Image 1 (cartoon, rainbow over the protein chains, first blue to last red):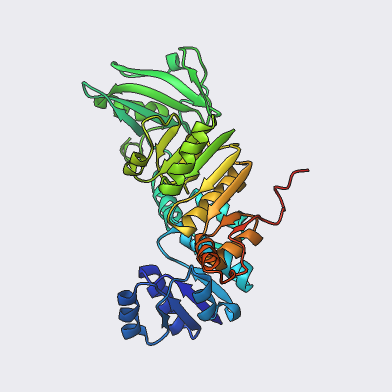
Image 2: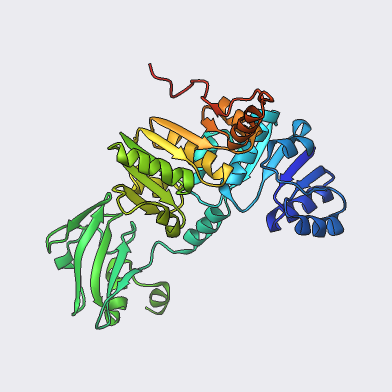
Length: 226
Length: 151
């Protein structure tokens, strides 16, 4: 396969290197001459030291016979233009763009970019996976050691089906609101709690263990020793 | 009418003033607040510091549904992207992008973006002054109407 890579930063460099090792024909475009020369030293003369956004040079680099154009510069607007020029002006069958602002993903797809690589989205995805949803979430720290804490009620939460007055809420702590189906409602002592509710509490750090037991359930360690 | 201009350079600032004097509602966006020094003290429009290719910035600036959207920064690609965000996401009336690369200007006109190309414009002006004809390329290209064509 003939792949035209545009942008000789870290992503472009390693992408090119891997593609060559896998036996593909690759041309890399990098407009910075110093950087281009550096890559030539390491990977051989597969580099075109020109701006891939410019129609003339994109053509000269062989985009009209490329199977894939991968635009991996650090600038979203450049990657969009490279892919659009490749697709619409040079009839490249497949275009790939690196997108830094996740908000641009829809736009890029809508405008005909075939494949989106979003490092921001990938990092975001793995961070969000690492946040356990069955724990207390600290939303804000206030004066006098007070904190605003959120607990999302899982099916196995002991609080499901109970009202706040039936729970043993520690002294100095107050449940004040619940977010249900995206709507915030104030929490009265007789409001029954449901699965999926996000319960908001205010209290000092000492209340946390008791609050955890009441809203999330006793922690695994506690259960083991119980 | 409501006019949003991205890029407060000489042309952007000049047009902003002209629209403002003509009694239109004007928002001008630039990455650098220093660029706004080009606007006179009498300018009554809004000056917003921000990235004109960022949908959030454009929405905050009130670009959604504006009548005229002009992308006039120094970067061809920034202009193209800003104009496409405006057309596809913010349903603006008319969008135009300054593109100084003639190949790109023609390609984007085919994709439905009105473009103005300074390179062709200046070349033609100089050739004309010297009585040497012209490049034969249009410097302002209206798009072939497609999705945004009026019924």
